[in-house]
Length: 426
Image (cartoon, one colour):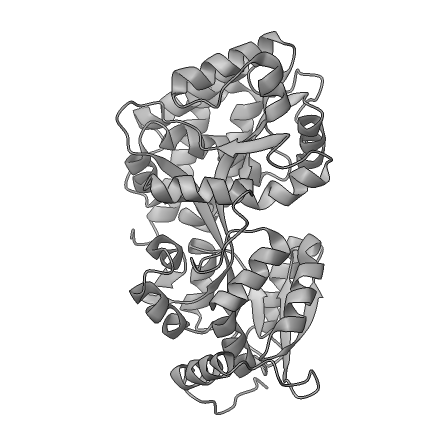
């Protein structure tokens, strides 16, 4: 039987949490704090979640990690209608949240966001990633930009500068290739990474088209997609991207990172959440590696960057629901966000929380904020999941056979047509 209970309104819970934080709240001993069940599939972040949970003034965290994402999704979905659902859990934004929202399984957290948005302390684009029908259903576990990681030692060895234009970028790639190195590492391991460069090539020529394509208002057979595949094919043909014939083959994430650390691969296009992993391969942030946003190919475009916002959701039916709402409120506070930033080195949503100024992620964030970059949602979350799941397999076929672009475009459009024929467009 599904567990139900009478609970205070969200606004009242949020007010109580805010009062606790404002009053210092940490005076309560661990024995006095209620338990909060937390689940996630980020096995490498387990120690961070545990450390954060020890400092939460509202709750004693009981954190359950899952090593396998597929099993994690199945377990969480099965639990959500019941009291055994985790009070708080990691998920994915955009369309990957939508079915949980539509089913009424997750809590509306708009009350937490309203004052922060009004004060300009959080970006509207981040809130939008979690917004459905005007309500905001998550707090961000991680905010990340997709940037080009570059090996500074390779740049120094070859006398290269960080490119400001597309021509400068291509010039660097040619020089790196001539030096016997792989200019850009890429992988299709795990399927999903296939969308990384597909998205990037699209936004560098027409970011508005990219947004229309995500919403079913443009076609995968349009000239902009053909041009993206043509550029991709050209780069692989010139040996500027790992194309399966290099000594590294289609590198996995780990082997690509090791090759990057050794200076055998000069660039990787990855989310900024990867920064700590890069340094753990044995090279020093700032000294040995840095980041930049890929320049636009089309002249005159405003600067833009792909971002992702990983959500933490609150399960409506969980027996630790009320505690989870208080924890989510604290999470978005200056102190809560600062603690998570200190533990992980991640960008966080609340601008009152800061990373050390010498961090590459902090420098990138400053450049994006000061440059008024257009933020574009990541492909994986910005288009409906049934399209994305099928599309990455088609795009992988192109990476394996760059001459298959025409067939792949037709197949992609068939996938999109089938979905949008049965669903309303936003």
